[in-house]
Image (cartoon, rainbow, N blue to C red; front, top):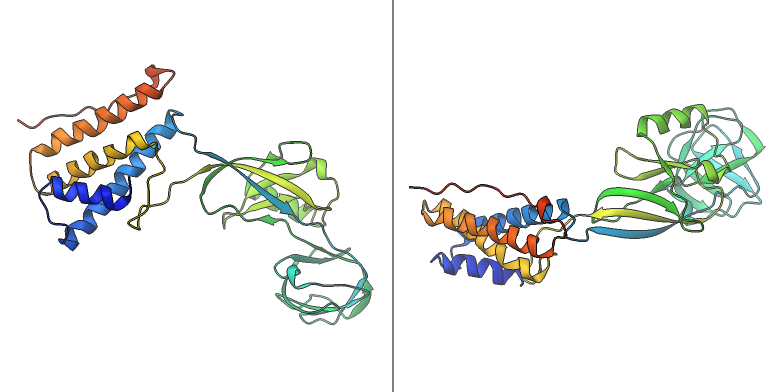
Length: 281
């Protein structure tokens, strides 16, 4: 059932014209609220598969050639092959604690940093360019696990504060991939520690979130038999808005049908909980 089918049924069955644009906007909001409620109920009782797997390649560190610094944001390379894809990655000179971010690719022998290099002029310096951040898919609501694809090893999860402390204590990228850990950053990215010393494929197991219904052709990510309960739930909200006593009837139908459909699909019916409905006198 498409979004337009759902809101059209709600409006017409409650004797409202679809041209009542202000009211229609409210109905659409109520439908999405009931959608969230039904999704949360089914997910809570493991009656819907909300898990997804996302594969992403973590790039290898780069350390070919040497670099020269001059106390500015410019880094000049010797025997380097810098590339535009390195923009956004971390840059660190071996033996120094401070870590920078590459902001601009100029040429295969020149890059610029996000801030001026904090040291005197020097040349023939060893360095590392690496990427320790992984973007999450847009529909991710919760990360369950991060695994290495080559051996399915599950990486240890730690808190972001603990990971930041490790970065301070051991700021240099470490090549021991077997001790790799991850944390979720303040910006919602996966941070790896130590950063990958070689290219690896990671698998991220996560719980997907539903996308709000917006376009007329959007369809709920619910089993088809659950689509009609969104009509009943939104009708209860519209009747309540109209101060119509039928709101309690539709409210009861929403929860009863949700429970009945869940009971039909559940292996353990004792898990199903009901929301009590109090009828108006």
